[in-house]
Image (tube, rainbow, N blue to C red; front, side, top):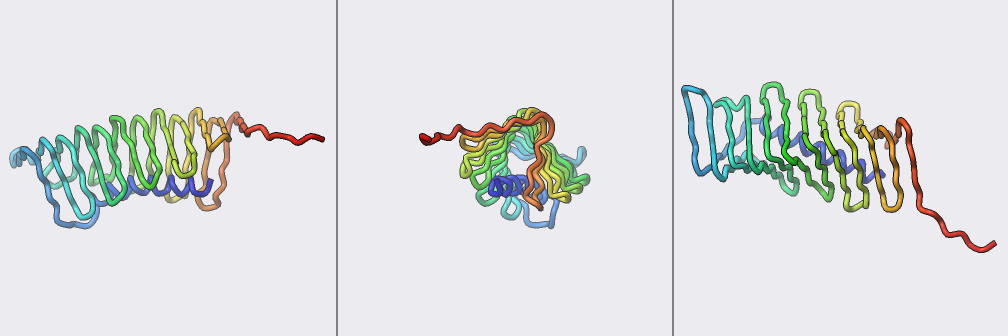
Length: 210
């Protein structure tokens, strides 16, 4: 499952990269919308209708974007789509704090990158702690490896180089199936550890005549 683990890394790093661009080095920013309001008294910017936000290689489209004028707190609602090269993250609602470097994406959120798909009810990320969490009906699919997994929660810890799937985990690769309460991937050693009551099902083999 080495290629599958690599796919997880690519996807989680994508989520970190997308938000890091917003919080990182200053580059020219372009904001377009059908209507744009700059409210100096309230200290906020409101863009509505076919909103397009571009900074460097990152593009963000949504139906409404609200931010304070120093971009410390950003909210996007309605058909939120991040794009960076061939990578895409989408959902219905994004909130991101540029000071704490913490954010949340919800409303049928999904990540697509290099043939890998992750969906859940909610994504949360913490750039300072280098952590990413997907919760609620987590689904992973690696089309190249014919691998899918279902869980209640996915956690990624970059500093520990560890990915954890937990809560009624079900994984399928071709005809092979595994059920467990928790599966821990060590990305440094390429070791996979299943915890709790675990069941591994392998396809039957045809035996020759004796």
